[in-house]
Length: 86
Image (cartoon, rainbow, N blue to C red; front, side):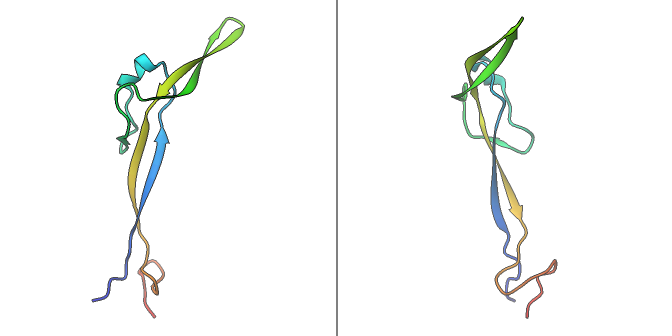
């Protein structure tokens, strides 16, 4: 029995919203995502505060999250929703 379906594993990456680093401990990834960073996360972003007429920007932190996703695909030489052969 030849394998007709060769699923591809896809990694979907995302970053959480930028917040003050001290608050980022509590930040969770969306459901289904795994947190790749720990503690306060990565200080690679800026967040903004509006104060009266000014917008101030401060260095902040965010977490990197990843989700593994099985993408159904047919093996080479097969095609269609049922992976039909020649």
